[in-house]
Length: 120
Image (tube, rainbow, N blue to C red; front, side, top):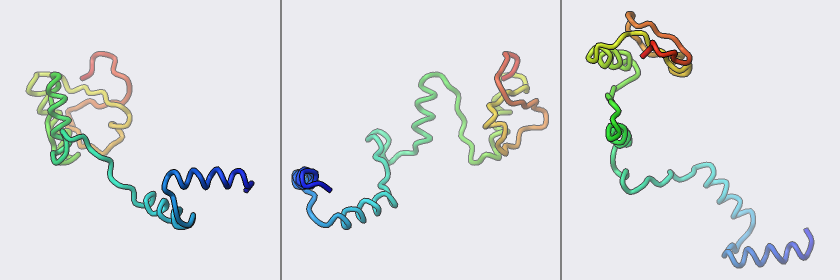
């Protein structure tokens, strides 16, 4: 390393309060990267269930939500929603959702891809 570069880096380290061996700082950085701190949540959601926050925000703009305990209950919850509104059972899903192991009712016509207008 050139003398000028060493001098510049030494001044930067001094200004930043970085005193001590480079190896010590590198170990500290490696330890922090290996076990990063959790991201800070906004104060409005600290200590609350984030699913409840999302549901409240969705419902505030007119969305209908239902909470299920597991993926196994998802098909039944969708069936209940469609039945309560007298909607059909032809359902179009994104390929990512269609590939997941969700137990859809046998009466559903499930397909993956872009909706064309006749599906739910």
